[in-house]
Image (cartoon, rainbow, N blue to C red; front, side, top):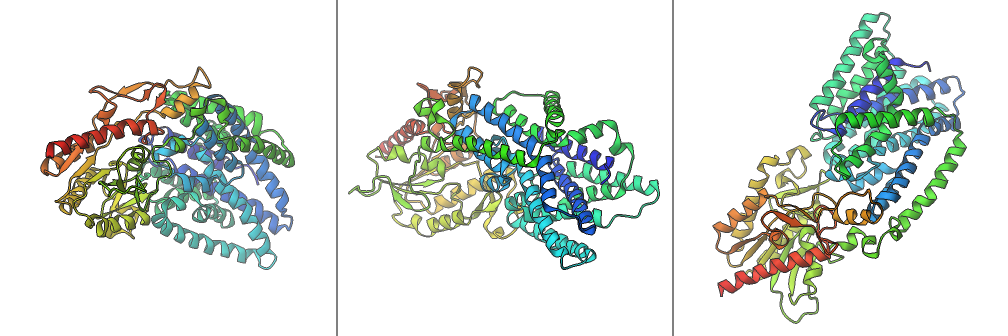
Length: 617
């Protein structure tokens, strides 16, 4: 296949859109469409390679895979090795173990499954994944493995013309399924191959059914139209839209049109875009780790520094790695050799021998909730002969006090449900999918538990402002039915009032939201043992006002049996909040308490409850 300057320029549009989106979403809210453009390009190129080989009866699967190995793996392998080396020097055990897990799956091209289960592409947690961007490489590789095998088998029984028609049908079916699943299972639709096939096949159809354009004017018009569609997509599309839904047709058709135009205008063939296109793969590889580092260490990198570093690393990768003539078998051997120590890092819990014992613990081991039961009725003193004094409900922010309570003389009936808001009229979205487990558990609570022993006081602790909610009646409707963030506080207000109306004879203690750290304390302390260049771990952070607490206070002031307790008072004064005491972190992550932190705040909460009860007597 002759080198297509227009396609090389199209790569530049795609990678720049992705880079700017990742650096600042507000500048280019739909910049992630660059990945969809890359999929179309890949489909075009791979279909060309395969069909030319099938037509001339010279297609070789081994040569096809060897070419893909030489093109993709070396630069990725070097990036992974660099991150593993830097991680050993700077990352605490928990983060380093996560890096090893990501690295293994990235090199095996199955990382898209990890991120599908672990976090959404647009979630805040995505910023803690240094290899998140490799999900698209995994999708492409899975396509490369399956696509030529299917075509090679079908070509033995069907004509080339029939194969072309079959691909049209598969493209349309895949597009229909994608539009459906982008609403029903958005995270799966985003990360998994079945809902991305149509994008690559669309590029394939551009090769199989080229437009017959003999004059330059229609080529130029088509090229302008295609670029306009891609640029427009980058501005009008946002992460709030189910993706890749029907709106994904906008940038992918734009890419399809540009490929069909086969134009030679400066819009795509200018020298700057030609260079960026050549470096686009390495730019894609290195830009996201820079975003990760910038976020983790609060470097406040400006866009010019970000772009400069990205281009320096990318050009080095292109000229030193990508242009080298590596042999496929040696590349695979290098991958296997690299995977062995990385797996060792994973098995040694992120090489925890590098730090002292307490900093070698995982965040899960530090968490105050431990393995205490959730999504079922439980008691803090299982063998107690005394009846339960309180009913405690909530999510993991409530369950985190379990270790504290089990060491106190309180027999408490608990209904803990991680990632669940006790809202009877609204469903919780987890990774943009309705949590049926949560909805069913909340329904059972209101149908049964709240009616049993109507005088037992309720202690309600939640991550009050950490959810996406949708009305129950929209249960089987798209994600777009979720309530507007501006309505969230009013919904919480109404849902708590709903609880109160059913509990007029009991006290309800609303445990407010607390000030959370601006950095991962546990990881910071462990990293400080590794390097003098590690991030600073502030002992105090400024105390901030939490809007949702004002709602909770308002409700408590309206009802004589409802009390608001601000847990921040347990570790904050008027101006600042303590994050570290005697080198002990208060939090395991950016929201949950360690056993140490839960002891401090748990003691404060129950002392406040005792004060309230003593005044009532």
